[in-house]
Length: 259
Image (cartoon, rainbow, N blue to C red):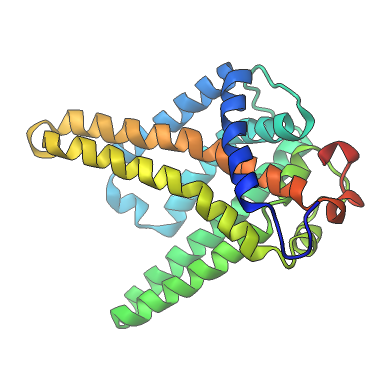
């Protein structure tokens, strides 16, 4: 059980990475479908003109479409970690209340981040100095990170159909744990950052960007897809483990099996 202001940071990170491996073994078919989804959207980013993604609304719509298709997987990972329930097949069920609630709340972090991009876009369009634009973008990013982290335990609660799963309760239960949650996420993402940098370093000497651009694009898309294939279930696992670590502070609202 976590004491106030204290979460088992290293343990949570280690368990989250083990959960990613367990998910890959237990739900191989589901992971394969997600691999195709991520690969498709990463290829679309290459095909669609870059100017399209400079529009905050367009970027949000693109991310929302990907999130919609990933929702069955994200819910399945939460339920596997928390309830030990294996989902063998990919089922897109937007008619289910659980699906709709989960997807709707995934739009909130996306909206927060899109708002940050919009603020930066408007400040630049207003002709403000670069320093002011950077400051505005930085403030928006800080607010976005705060909201996303405080809402983190809401997602596993929705995934397991927990009574009392609301943004208000998520903010209340995570009060005093922001920095612990922040460092758990930071430490968890560091290996992925190192992996990404390592892939770039290994591929750069090949000088394919200019000589064989198609092959370079293929490698770039492949690298991004593989990293995301780990990053998405990792984020879900972290949320589930934080949900566990909050212990008795969450017990009075969430089902006994969610601990």
